[in-house]
Length: 101
Image (cartoon, rainbow, N blue to C red; front, side, top):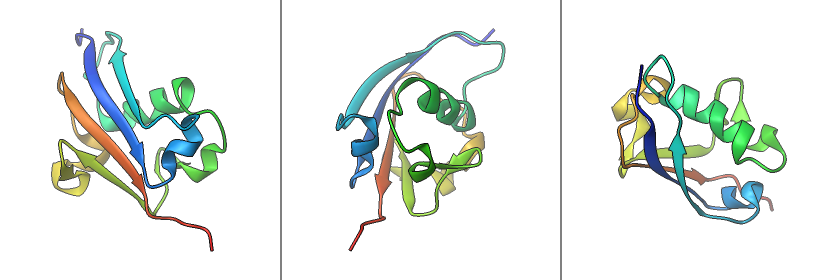
C-alpha cells in the first residue's frame, strides 16, 4: 500500500483560471494500492480541483498540448512524464502557453 503523498500543485500562465483563479494548492493524495504517478495525479486533479472547461486542461489522460509541466522545476519529459512516481513534498507546476488573441 502506497502511503499518502503531500504535494504542492501550482497552475500558471492562465491555467489557474480553470481552478477558480487559485494558483497554489497544497494537496495530500490518499493512500492507494499503487504508488502515485502523474497519470493518477491528473485524474485526481480533474475530479477534485478542476472547476471548469476540462478540455482546456486535459486531453485523454494527459495534459493538452501547450501546457508545460514541471516537476520540482524540471521538465516532466526528463522525469518520465505520466509515469513519474510522485514523492512526498514534490512540487508540480502546470503552465499554460496557450493564449487567446
